[in-house]
Amino acid sequence: MGIVNIEDELHEQLRRASRASCRSINGQAAFWMRIGMLGELNPGLTFQELAARELKAAGVDASPAAGAAA
Image 1 (cartoon, rainbow, N blue to C red):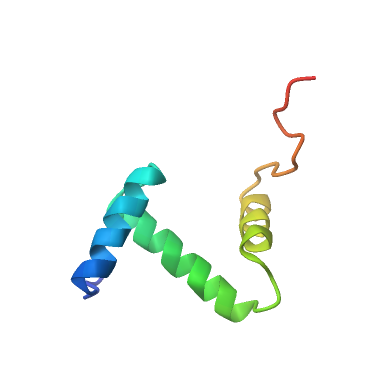
Image 2: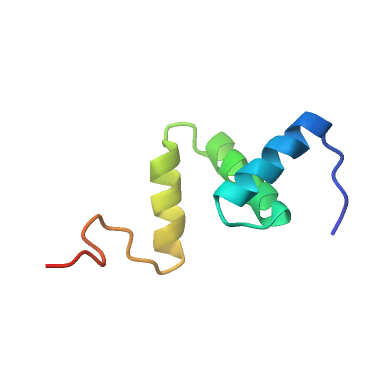
């Protein structure tokens, strides 16, 4: 584990995003870093495609009808 130095304004945006996403500040930073890394490695995929792929890999049913009431 290490320490990452970021600009104050980015840290403020991170704090706000973590609150809106119900994540810790560290969890939000890790999410952004992972999505950024995946985006660089998979430039042809959208954010939604990357997120769906990660959810599927974790065993989550990400289909639109999942959990919907009949």
